[in-house]
Image (cartoon, rainbow, N blue to C red; front, side, top):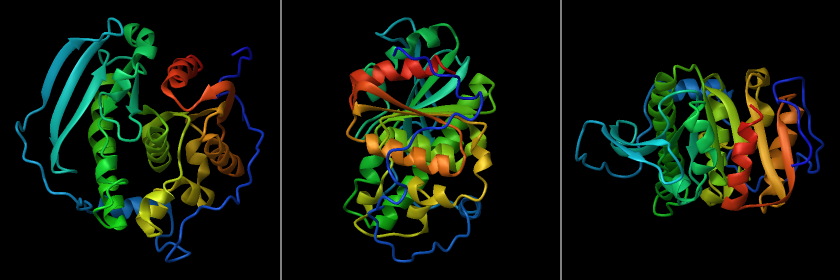
Length: 312
């Protein structure tokens, strides 16, 4: 990239917009006004009780955490495999960790149908090995359950979102806590590509006190197609295009370094622009990076992630 952009924390970097905020959401709402008054009220109500998950419990083979150290093919990074039984899903959950618990903790989500080893297998973790080896970054690659939530047509749409909420609890209450403790950090960075960017962004916007940076790679943020026209409060407060325009306290995001990366060959390019427009309407500083000769695939994401980390 020939042009060097300023650090996203300096000043109020704003973006030129190309798409109107009034683009149709494509969601059939049962109730035009959510019952909950605000995102904070909704999250507080959820914290009082655990949402039941929509799939049966999986018996744990080992109730203790399982660790395995190995060498990564992409370099000298220390790799750990972690498995634990989480109460939020009533089953075992798996994750890979790269690094020695130093530097910035980065939670890196997989794409659609991906698993905890996808970002390793496709070289995205390897693309930032220099930062990991230098002790500047520790990468946490949690599993995903999209097949059991968003893509699970065998259960009611409401249960799909309730299952997703259980997954968010695993990330925020298990993974975040581990990452912050190991890296001695108050906050974590989150990133992902495509639907993984949705997970990163939605959690960042819902839990800004826990997140320092959001790096979106060709983000796909519109989840309306997963619910067959059904709509409720859970869906509303997990749809950034819906709840962000009505957020009463957008200043809560201004400590966060937000990068929305896309390109002219990205088939989800309009989604990054749409999210950028909403952020601009709330005066939330961020960097919308629309690069030439970039598309929606791993070879582009392997270039984008280390480039964005160099700006932090």
